[in-house]
Length: 484
Length: 105
Image (cartoon, rainbow over all chains, first blue to last red; front, side, top):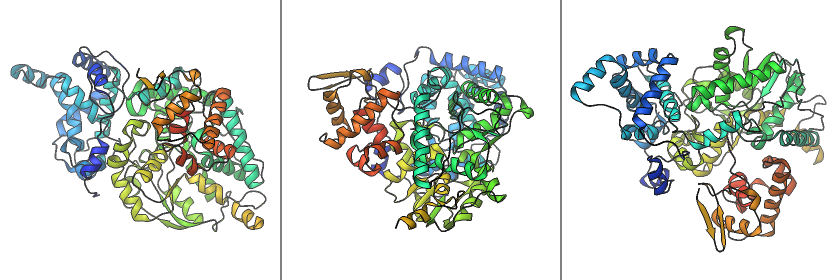
């Protein structure tokens, strides 16, 4: 992967200060994201205490012991990192970033490191190092491309994740994420976008009316039905932003006769814990699972959202019963299966424009969901072009790792984080950019606007909605023709 | 918490300029907030959108789905962006005195 280093003008925009000097002074933290006020005294001591507690109660030590032995800082990861490629700044090389935390571990948590450090009186954790970590770990979009290239097998994203976790324990985390998870776990509405239940009900009724108007078919969004095959939980923001995605999913269930329900007590699969705190991650997973038990659903079905799918898929078994836990699926897996079994019919004459597909890192990097969406797309889109690279090697939208929710760093996300992605999108010349992820959709819409790329960002089910053949054989296209 | 002052108006806002106490909202405050959002003049359509958001918020405690907003006001999303350059969630909602949207919005 190669992209040009950003221009000095772009650099100025991307790294422009976002905070007033008095806030930086009060919080003793010069980072671009907003942080809630926290206890600024004795940060190094508190950081080390939090680090020690995490090492005691988790198995991170095992990974760190391995990483400090094999790390050679060879910088092969630099080639794969979209951030480094855009900034050209050595501080953005993944193994440099990892070394920030590994050096703290070596100095304070290994015998050799402690002795050496005490003899030479050097290397101890300082406020400056904490500030550098607070900046560096949130410059990364956690896309995990670097892990593909590391000859020693170091998982730089895991180290960044741990670094963010420790920082969150001493109160340093982006406010945007903290406020959202607080509402999700302790607020009245119980979801990250603070959508009250009556608003959800109103929204679903509105969508049902719209489908009836456009397709002439009665399609329901079932609420709180017990004993269904699937409890469907999307990123809650879809209920504000992604009408077509939800309508497409409801239409797929209608066409395939699937048994599904949305729940009234938990309609948000977003799990920002994946980005900054294992404790939050576990609480969100347990909450999600409890709701699937209450409604006695057989499977947990996550909507078009990468991180929500990955966190549920990989952490439901960890926290909710191991192999006996309910299976977790992404909606594209369901649609793929239905299409393959011949239960879903799509009109191949509706989408004639050029279409390209963006792999969300969280479902593609490990090879989980790559070919399924392509099988669906090729079944009804006449003109599909791939981006290069794709699949497990895809390039991040630039807003991964929770950064997309941090509005104050938008120029950084779209000009630095999304620089390489912008090049890729432009090269396809596509009219529709399919991004089956709430996170990627928001970021890519901002990216095409800021980088002035002419294309429309949609979900996969948005296009399915346009082309789906329902009971009476009607598609939007045919209906328009009839009207005309 | 920062204070936003505009003429005689002085209100508490967050770092992004959203009102901290949405119940204090009135038309004068809306005009003041509009000045921070690249809105030169609050036209009839600006008010129609802001009032629609305001009414929905008072009834449901949140902004409406974007598709619903467009359908019920009759404005295309493109036109909404022309009126409020930061878009419906960040621009129009701010002027209508709603709190800052959270999560992936």
